[in-house]
Length: 237
Image (cartoon, rainbow, N blue to C red; front, side):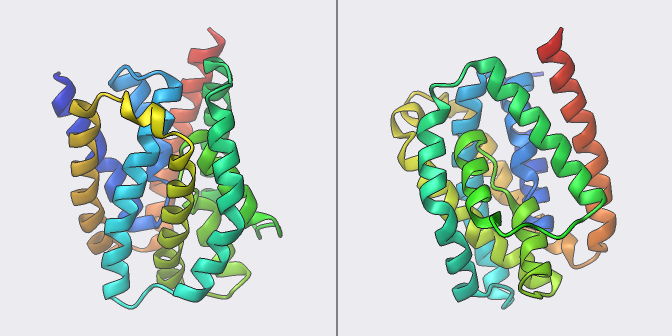
């Protein structure tokens, strides 16, 4: 299968998850870039940030038009993660590739568990979200959405829409520290991946209105556990 077809297919899945769940899609973007498209872990996390930023902006626009974004609360939540995201983004380039892959697999597994068994988030959710975004190239909607629901009592659609604002801000903050790495990416792959993810985000927004959030989360979490297990086995063997 050609790299273009793989990039388009993977991008569509990532966008679908981001649009439907307000997060989680980026946790699939990194392993897709590594195992399907041959990126190094460092390049994959940088490319993921670009993909997540563009896709989240698109999904944010769709949710904003529907009135599902709480701008002031989202801006305050995002502010806590801007500096951690930038610092972690700068540190990511200095980490061994195996360490990045292992850390990502662990985060993917924890994300899946959190989706299957949601728990109340801690007080440092905003800063922790920034660190994960900067270090591993993930948007962190799996942290933002439950925090907004549990701490701020948002209903689910408002939490999903507002989380996209948080993801966008943190991703941009991390990208500032990775501008040199971004310039060397294979844009013949990243471009189509991003375009398919943007289109998928619109479909995800429509899907969220038709299928229950719990059903979507459970399906996605099971797939994510399988991805995390594969990555850990790959690193350890």
